[in-house]
Image (cartoon, rainbow, N blue to C red; front, top):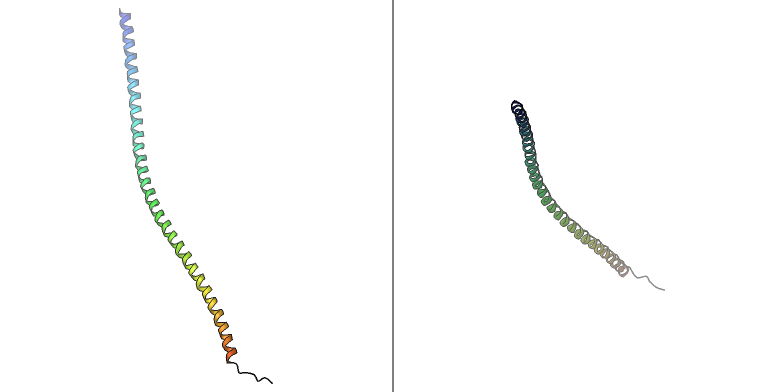
Length: 114
């Protein structure tokens, strides 16, 4: 019976050793899980912060694009109006030169014809 007792004691010692190893592995796994959970929380926080920043940038960008579009329209309208002013000035100058020429002819002293 002592052999059986010794064998049982050996099995018991091995079983206790295996349980201790499993508990040690479990503790290490728990440590790794806590680390990854902490990292996950940090990353989720970073994602929230970056999402908020992205939202603000998108809003600002939309306002700036709208402002640029309004400026583009104003510039185009102003250039078109300026072109019309130039064309009108050109026409007015031409008419004035023509009228000045007509007036000059009308006010010239008549030449005596022989």
